[in-house]
Amino acid sequence: MPSRLFAFTVGLFVMTLGIAVSTKADIGTTPISSIPFSINLTTGIDFALVTFIYNILLIFLQYLILRDKFTLMHLIQLPVTFVFSLFTKITVDIVSFLEPSSYLGSWILMIVSVLLLGIGIAMIINSKISMMPGEGAVLALNQRFSIPFSWMKVAFDTTNIVIAGIICLVGLGELVGVREGTIFAAFTVGFAVKYANKVIKRLFSDPDNDLD
Image (spheres, rainbow, N blue to C red):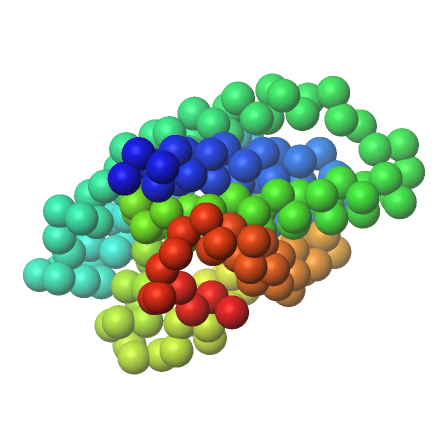
């Protein structure tokens, strides 16, 4: 258990670091963070604070969907959300010095972001401590409507991107938080998780590990 908790905590930190790096790429951020980032850009409200509120809303969404099936285990996401938001604040400060000087530099940062996200998410999944509210919301929708998780995940990410795009267009008159990097992340993070899992699962001998 201590090793899994350690892996979960490190995974959370690496995941938030990946998100923070994507915000500095200047070609869009990841789908799950696109709404908080767009609100941050249009209102100036702290990114970590918006991230915290957004994830709390996702937990509440799970409650609305699951009702009687919403258990105390789902509430573990509350302290996880707090730590995730705290790590977001820390990692955003850590990467504040990053300023790509070219379009190529922006893409390098986005690729690094995807790799970090893949490693972080794989560590979180393998630790089996808890899930992030975003994945929890997708799973709740999957259970409620009997739609395959993978398809529901695509629909969820797409909805995030569309809403974030609308926020940017209304608030700024242009797509800033949602750009080609966001689309790239939407299609590649899953593959990064898959290949990171090949390494990480060696540390967790678990017959139920089927991320391949």
